[in-house]
Image (cartoon, rainbow, N blue to C red):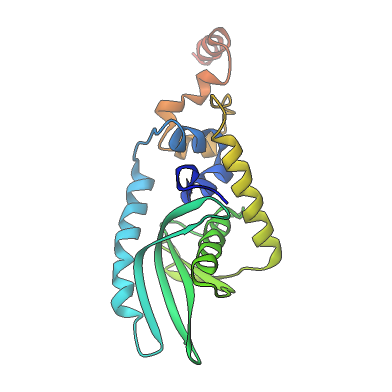
Length: 209
């Protein structure tokens, strides 16, 4: 069991799977900057409130910006939307996460959503078998089953993030054009410089001219 002082944010899991250095800078060094992509993501999260009206009914109750946590995993954060579906005499939580883009090739989004399910299971003593994403680009839901493989992966990533954030400093960056150029922390991280010697960087710049 983790104490509240050791809780990590749910978003740290996705940040870790995207880039370990980004995760460290955000969640250990508390560095954050917005860019176009993060701003669009913020708008998507704000629109989640619309779901409270559009998806509520006699068999579905919807809560937005719901605070959830897990002492077992040392996690805490807010779920965009949690629908409670009536099954017999019970209300079963169904987490829904809003994303600005489209489904990703890796499982970073799925891990974040599964972590929400694990928190809800621990808090409410229920089984959460499925959740969904709503992606801004495709304008549709993508359903996710919380099978044993995804659950184990999520728990493993939680442990790795806890270990990462105990380190005294961030690891050196590994520049990836696709990832780094889209990252809002590029100006803080300066991966093209920090990942190599200054002399080598200057030589490369001069060679391009």
